[in-house]
Image (cartoon, rainbow, N blue to C red):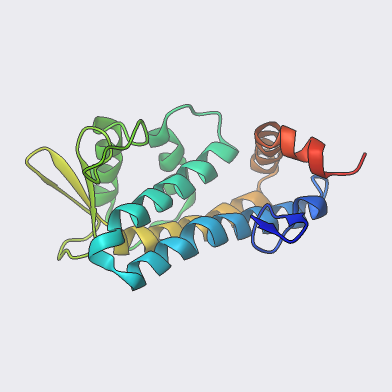
Length: 195
């Protein structure tokens, strides 16, 4: 995001302000990015028109989950990255049962999430988002996984909270996060940080 002459990593943190050596600052900026560029826009889309923007909402939320999971693991697959977030998040923080969680993770694997979007509002191999459902998180109908974005929002919020706690309390996760951050944003860091 660019405002006047500043380019922002997150709504509150400009690239020029990023201090890769400050644990607290880097975590806050990253969480601000996930909330400000993914979670908040997803929630706003549902306020505008849930029937029209459920797909965009769900896609943003899955991208946020994938980004968080990737930043603390070396896993290549989306399922493994999101599963890591489920592992970090105590059941009492989630609004779903373990069987629903397992069904969601199976659907990510079966439907090859994030491998490409198609114009029907499905993720590759039959994935659909909805906000008008009377089921918990996920339901399968005729080989199509239908995800309730209202629950996905709650799960994303729980993931963010536990992800932040993990980075603050686990030295290995922090080092993995910092290394991934340095690698993923190498070009931007070189461009915008002094020295």
